Image (cartoon, rainbow, N blue to C red; front, side, top):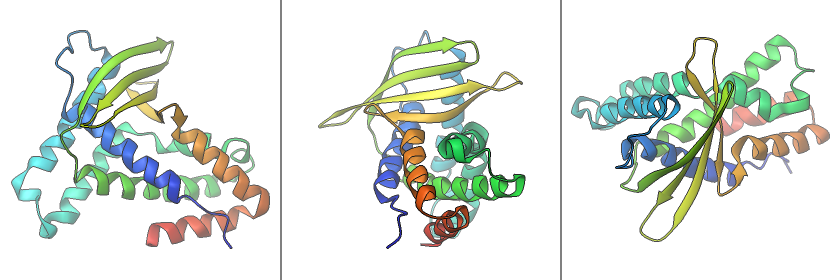
Length: 208
């Protein structure tokens, strides 16, 4: 039986992705004090909302064109390189440049597939920004998503690139880190099987 059990993590990621987009699609009323970190998140998600509302990009016939546009925005704001490195943790250094490139590509595709399938069906939740922490070139923005029945705390961790922009490298939902979850999962897998088997399992997940 395969040790590759990402179903629970992927369900959680789908929730995170929906909430991430809701944050910018339905920003809080009191946003006068938004920082550059929050501003960048909002700009990206406003662009995504524009794509989702574009009548020429709706329907099955426009699926590929719509998703191509969404992928570009996703890659511009989420650092799959950093997420991949942090998720592999101690197993990252031992990988060759080619192995790292392959892993980033596959891991990014896996996240991206879930990402897009969820944002295409966003709903009208409300989000409030609670607070943020900015230290040197890292930041955390804490938010709360309010639905009809529950309130969900969501925190976003970002780092500032050399050109000054902010990239998301982790999301924490109800106190649980997305990267931390994957790091634990991949560590367990690689303790029992080879890196090649992990790559094989990632490919299977992408194809299903």
